[in-house]
Length: 205
Image (cartoon, rainbow, N blue to C red):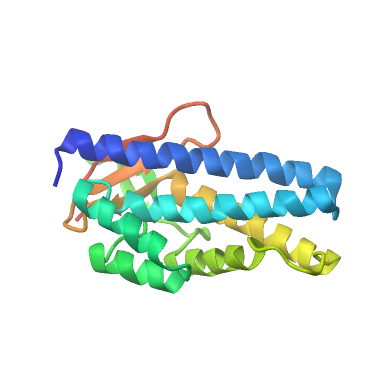
């Protein structure tokens, strides 16, 4: 495994790209409201589905960012097949805990501790949901002899809004093993501000 500094820096690089993709989705979904079901709207849907795909792949690589050699192998696994179940199965082989988990930080009266971690009650993006959304993106990111129907367009916009909402909650405050060997970090995406994402080494019991 690389040094702690290397691991944190590598994780931050993936998180910056994730933040950019989700920020772009926010802007594109706002534009979709104005153009509606139209050629421009269909292109906007395709663009956001690409953001979905890239966000999920960046999350995959985040989980091995502490290991340069393992990360290079993960890239080959991601590029090797199109199917989401294959990609995620390969990631599990590299890191069984490859998907982040949402957490909350709440105040505590314990001496020497500013806060403690607790599980999240709100819905957030899970591994299984990410697999589903990745598959949905596959269905859209191909040309078709038939123009996208109003019903399909509305359904895809709803799916994109759902993905964005669940991802925002997952990455508001999260924990993840970025090594597959217990190098746990906590992070904040800071999607609602201009601040860079934050990652701190934090081993959880």
